[in-house]
Image 1 (cartoon, rainbow, N blue to C red):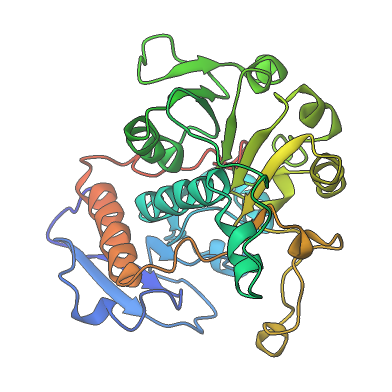
Image 2: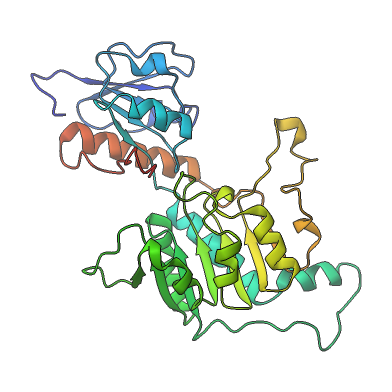
Length: 327
């Protein structure tokens, strides 16, 4: 969408994320931004910034694009957008380096058994001298389930640890020589080769429950599992069974199956029906891979860059979401 005749493109910023900072930010050329978190209509707006806009906002005749200012698209919004093929949907991958760092931190914590021995030493217990040993990651193989912005950002970190890196992709690209790639039908074969599995997948009908009982059975014994995507990608019961039986050496989870229902429950809600919180080889993280100093400013800059790419016509596909696939 290019600006014609000097007319400004109106953006309705309805999301709370970035709303306090957008007024002072340098806007893209040809853009006017209206901040209204409670807007009931998007009349006159060509671009809507909102994580979960109601259907009535999407009906505005002027609307052409919806930008979700964070990674991931909610199922309800995907359904509403699917009913409106004239609209394009974009999200943000601003947090990819933050989440990638968190994923590798969880992997290192598991490999060096930091959680297990930290918990014991807090009670004065130095552990048995023949207790579980650390895993030296150099020369081991990491498998990425999810090779989007987050997965790609982990590659240099993992290689810096001396690891070989492979990935399972929806559509393997033989021209992309970044890592060895496997198709979805080869998942179990790839799992059987992996010493560590890092998941950064969104929640979609294709990905939910991907790591099920059969997948855990296909894993190389003693593998380490890290999930920074969505909790639903891992089957909760299958994960607990594999962990409890000792088939995997550890889990590092930043995303879960159960979340607090409101602020008052943030200090009383366990993240699973199973006692993962009691297992010594689980590193728990309360969905905070994104909680990096200055992250809101990074998010704002990324969304403004997407708006600029759309309005200028330089890259109208920037961060575009395939509504059917969910990412």
